[in-house]
Every structure is written in structure tokens, then in C-alpha cells.
Image (tube, rainbow, N blue to C red; front, side):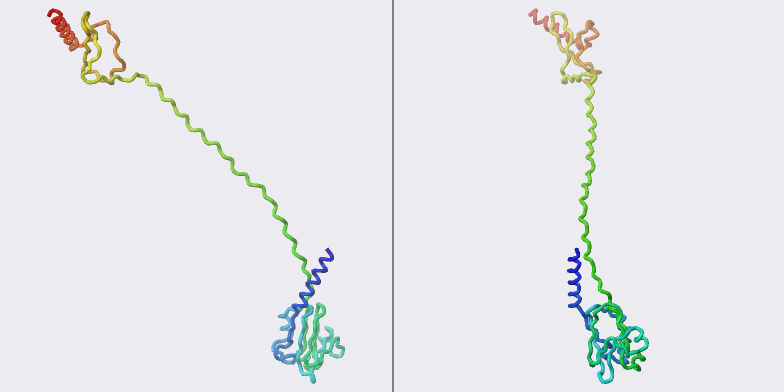
Length: 234
């Protein structure tokens, strides 16, 4: 784990080195008493990191750049410099984080505002993001229980018919009638008041000849007997 941390730190330092920026102090006007923007306002808009560089351009005959402590910065005291740059085209590389104080060696110009504070951001090594835990397998959602189909209503058996099938005699056909002794029975026609719906079953033999035989049947029987007697005599 320690080796991995050192490796990450080395890679970060290498990337910081390759991505270092060079800042031109004072813009086109350079290091002077009348910069294009106030020095400290300009530095407040910037982001300075370790290995970044400041470039100062000034007339070397009359000016220079001095790195001082905060107390000397406030007093514009260049008598105790930490670093002094006087070549006319100087560069300063940040080797640590924290504040840096720059003033001109000309006290009159320093009192007019030719001084600069730079705060270099601390080196921060971000730990690699923790790997997200694998999503736990979710239990399958049970499917809704299939409901048994509702029993279909039982078909009711047809009730037995109370009456037998109606007998529909053919037109002109008479039902059986009681015959006289010695004579062939001739079917009697239906009475005018009877309809096929009124007859549920063939009538059984009757003991009363007069009740079972209609007047028309009697005439038919008598006619049949007469014809039979005539045939016998002849």
C-alpha cells in the first residue's frame, strides 16, 4: 500500500512538472509602477502551483526584483533580501507551497505599489476513488400466483318431459274404432273438437261402444256391415 502511495505521488509530481505554467508579471507593461492591472488583484485571479514560474521584465539599470519576508514586504525594506533578481529578464520558480513576497529594490516605487504577493497552493495527492461495491443480486420477484379458473356453471340436465310426444295423425286418417262382432273395424275420424295437441297417447279400448264411437263412426260401421251383408248374399 505504501509503495502504491509513493507511485501515485511520483506520477503526480511528474504531471505537475510537465504542466507547469509561466506567468508574466505586469502583462505588457512588465514589472513597473504602472502595471496594466494591480499586482495583487492579478495574483488573486490566478492559481499558482509548485513548479510554476514568474517572469519579470524591467530595466536592469534602474530596477530589480527582491524576495523578502512579510515584515519587509509591508515596510518596503529591500535591505535583507531572501532572493534578488537583477538581470532585467528574470524568472522565479516556486519550489514550495505558501506565500511569496516580491518588492522592487526602489523604495519609492515600492511605496507606489510595485510589490506583489503570491500564494502557491499546497500539493494535494488525491487518493484513488474507492471502487464501487458490486451490486448485490436481487432476489427474483415472485410472479403473481395464477388463480385457478372459476368452475363453469354446471349444465343443468333437462327435466324429463311430463307428457309423451303428441301424435299428429295425418289428415283424412281416422283413429282405430271398435268394430261390431263379425265385421272389420273401420277407423273413425277425429272429432272436430280434438286437435293433435290434445292427444297425449292413443286411447285404450273402451267398454262403452256408444261413448267411444261418434255418430259419424256409427254410420260408417253400419254402412260397412250393410255392404258386407250384401256381398255375402250375392
